[in-house]
Amino acid sequence: MKAAAFDYKRPDTLEAVLAELAEVGDEGLIIAGGQTLVPLMAMRLVRPSLLIDINHVSELSGIKIDGDMLVIKACTRQVLSEQSNDISEAMPLLAKGLRHVGHTQTRNRGTVGGSLANADPSAEIPIVAQNLDAILVSESAKGERNIDASDFFFSAMDTALEDDECLKEVRFPIWRDQKVGTGFQEVSIRASDYAIVAAAAQLGTDSKGICSRAAVTVGGCAPVAKKIKAVSDVLVGSDLSDAALKEAAHSVIGKLDPESDVHATAAYRKRVAGQIVERSLFEARAEVFG
Image (cartoon, helix red, strand yellow):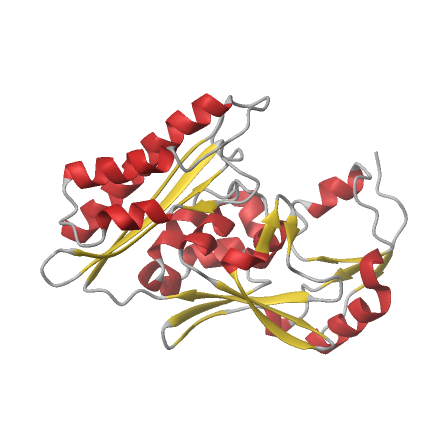
């Protein structure tokens, strides 16, 4: 099947992109990497009247450290993010998650902003954004908005972005704890498939090795990846012993209410979630004390 007829424009400034969005309303869509949008258009599940290509808008690409924030522009390719020294050093959890995104060919075209705007509940970049309390910056002809990751994702494939807005960048807070460890684990049917369940963990400790911060988010068990506060309640103030990590992982199970589908039953997802949260926590602890 082929895509329905559409108009195509390729502006080279963000101002021009926003002008097009303001004029076309909900009949227009932005295309960057196109790794999800193009197949949907080919199946005619999505039929935009106008496709706005942002690949030539230079102000929407780039990675930088801005104080205590890692800033990634929305049109930055996933493969460039995966290879970035700034990301591997300041945001190792994101670096780990990126390695699980699709495969090399799709990461060469896919963008960081595209994954966030697509809002798949199993996608790795949104899971990390939720876990680290990222701030997503959008812009329209009316002005700019900062949206917390916890408020950005409404449901599967549904976000807080308005029809006339373009996602501009995502800002990840950098943890400045004495030591920081990260873990990312997922289970999928095949390598490079969407995750049936995924878990991201990040631990911070003080100079005495006591946990000062802990964050765990589980994807694939709800329409939106879920950050589990109970993990922090268990771990902060502890010495991150085996018993504490296992207790924290077990606390996740009662906070999840997944549904069964063709890929896995709800019971399987719950059981696996507890196991991969435990693995991600042990992985993070190994980095802290390694």
